[in-house]
Image (cartoon, rainbow, N blue to C red; front, side, top):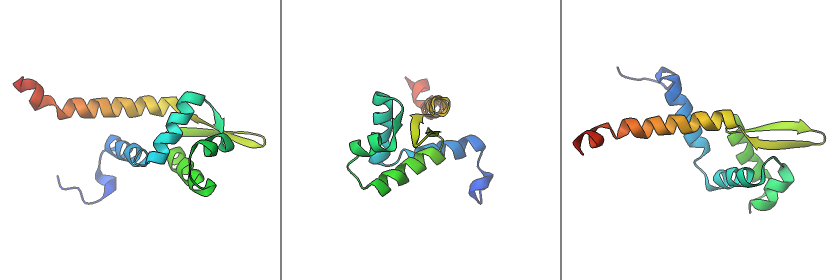
Length: 110
């Protein structure tokens, strides 16, 4: 089957690609490391840890949030960011299955 546009890919493949794209920048990895170590954090806490302009940190948070890797909850007057553990678990499952599937021939020859 020849795939002509992104909507013809299986939903799982589109989700994997979305997660991978969101993880594709070192600043986003740094944000995730911060949230993993510090727990729920407001923007100011995160921006102090990332050596970038606040507007750039905001863009990275938006990318992670739109991919569903993090979530934000409004606690007046701040937004508190956390890792979305449900989607993080799904991301880990997808990548684990992906790598296991990719090693089938190698595993059979050993």
